Amino acid sequence: MAREDIQHACAGRRRQRLWWAFWSPLVVLGLMLGVWQWERAAEKRDHLARLETAPQQMAPRDRPPEGARVTLSGEYLPDQTLFLDNRTLDVRLGVAVLTPLRGDDGRLWLVQRGFLATGTTRDTPSVTTPGGPVTLEGDWQPAGDGGPLFGPNREGRRLQQIDLAAWSLDFAHDGWLHLASGPGQLDSWWTPSVIPPARHLGYAVQWWGLALAALAVMLIGGRRLSRDRDEPAVSLHLDSLPSKETRQ
Image 1 (tube, rainbow, N blue to C red):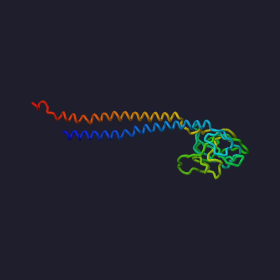
Image 2: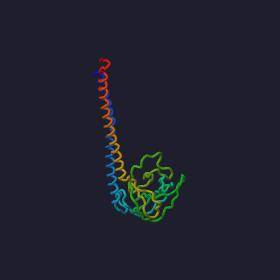
Image 3: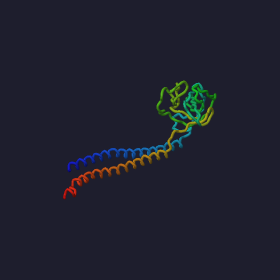
Image 4: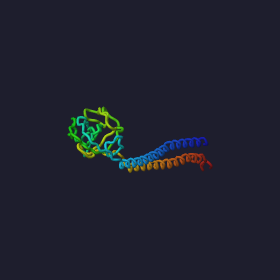
């Protein structure tokens, strides 16, 4: 019986080790993801604070910071207009109009003028562009990673994502102006893509809650496995005792 006791104990210890090996990483992962979301919330608060305090600049020589309110004077280049495809506004399907502007000093800027409804047609959109000198004001967005592309970026005069390489022009800075006021402005559709800090805090609480639940399951299950590991040895020992009829 001692051998059977040892075998039961060894099997119980193996089950316990597997149990801890499975649940411990889940607890640690939940804690780490919660901390990461907490840090992301702090980063977003700092980012929003920078946007709120972004400067106002007039045709800056240096690259403007993200969110800067930039004023430009010059003339549109209507023949260089391209269209950012697959935009929606108020359930309408359309494009965003992208027109370069030649500043008074000769430097080139890309201006995102707003939304133009097109419906489902794939014909080249038509838009009216003011001629002559104009003064514009808008919010600056530096160029960044536009995400994955499924096929070529440019199809005719449509773009899947804004990329200055689509124009054979030497722009003043690597970025573009989202037009807020001035001639040529269309319906505004763009807003900074910033997840609110409160949402990250909510994610953090969710991850920590899952980690706590996993910890509870790990401890309760581990305690039961420990009890089950010892019970066979006790029952086997009792079964080995002679019954009353046998003793008689």
